[in-house]
Image 1: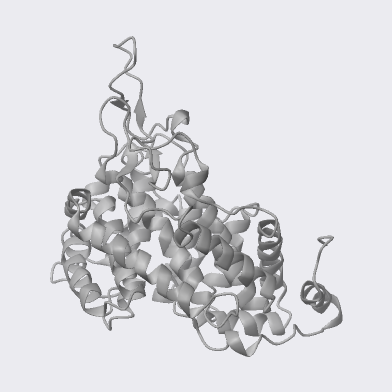
Image 2 (image 1 turned 90 degrees about the horizontal axis):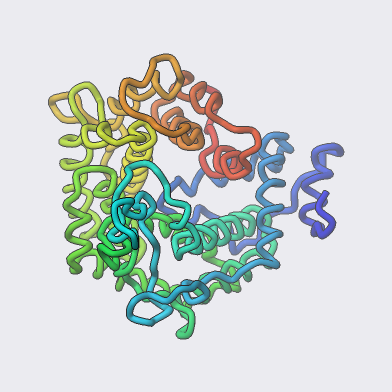
Length: 414
């Protein structure tokens, strides 16, 4: 066991052997949290399984607590902690380098960079996109750990990280992505970089899970909602936001998922409904053909990865639409196009039962199979999809194990 385990941790471990129950949550964490990428009511299922000493759920919680414990002595995270500075010299502006662009072999100085789709340039690592990944993982793990154990240390640390990134004047990120995915010699930022802020979806879930914690104040909530309202306005009003919203492929799907979630987060339900109505037509009906294929992902050099990536965004939209009263998990148009058809089409390829007929130049990221098909198994009550999910699960991937057991649990045996 971890050398710094709290009494809560110890009781969790002992319950595996002595039949002890986990101490009850604090009253502040009662009731489902307001979250956007999963159903907050599922946490009550997780809690019940922990109290019943379900071994697989306890094992996942132990993985989560190890990750959360590391965050107690890591971080915080901020765009201001990275170098080099953006072109305008303001460290509060987010900046990242486009991953698929490489030095031009025909030019001595390598400029302007040229695109090699699907081939990641190692020089693109280390930007604010990596810092944002660290923030997302940290605050989600910490907030979920607090929600499941009531250990106030986790909530306090998550709140500190959120204040550093979004609220503190010296370290807060500006609510825009002007310099995201720049290309040396070509552009100081691109609309395509907006796909990187999809990581904020789990961040606002973390905020929702912190509700009721003494560490997260009403003032904190107001300030972070103001930040996301400003960012949502930038997405709507900026040229780069307009460009990304108009995209037909996964970039446009993720734009709609983000914009809908942020609108719901700041209480703008009417705007969320407008975005969702458009997404239902453009992302579900027009971008999926009558065979269930994602039309705009199949010409990529990692076409299976991008088909699953787009499916992930569609599932987020379907989950968000539950806040608005529709049924995008199952609704299709008269041509039989919709999310259910997209899942059914891609399933035999994800399961390895059919050979993928399009380009896929790199090994498949199996975590997308595990998570997407668990969500599909729950939505469609499908043992077949659950089988695909389990086959795609890497036992050494702690993040996937945590998500499957604690965030997207099976609600009942299939």
